[in-house]
Image 1 (cartoon, one colour):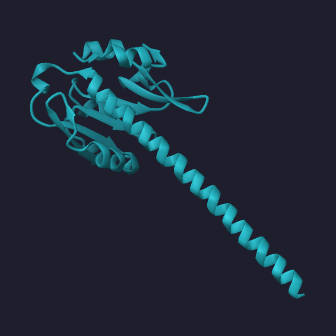
Image 2 (tube, one colour; image 1 turned 60 degrees about the vertical axis):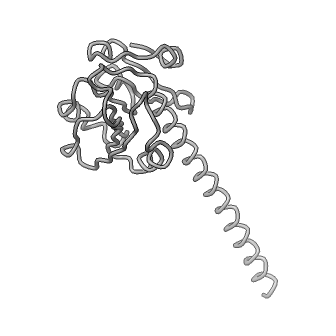
Image 3 (tube, one colour; image 1 turned 90 degrees about the horizontal axis):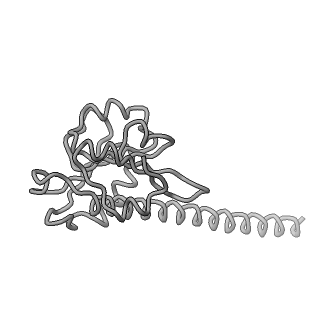
Length: 178
């Protein structure tokens, strides 16, 4: 009987160690994806050019619906510069609270509100989303996963209609351009 208890105890401890290792790996993957997404968003800010009247004051990046990416951006990019503008971040849980900003990231969980969100924004807001076919139906830059890798697509036509110029580097590295 004592041997069975020892075996069960060892099995249980092994299981906990393995589960903890798997959880740690999942958490590291999640953090890596957030960091990568944050780097992309910062790169979008640095490689899209707004009309001159949007080149004064703070550069506002807003996040709708994803507190994790907001925290990632806040930790790594608050007060960094886009041109001569300091980056400031805002977080919105409710789309009705959204105010004008330079860039708005809409999380994949909030895509169902995308058309309502668009109606609240200035034409000069760079709308960044995550989901299937969203660059074709509303946003200017859209995150997609291709073979489990984070990529983005650009609606250059919509950007140009809104007087936003997409930098050559973003165009070159985009998975697709509309």
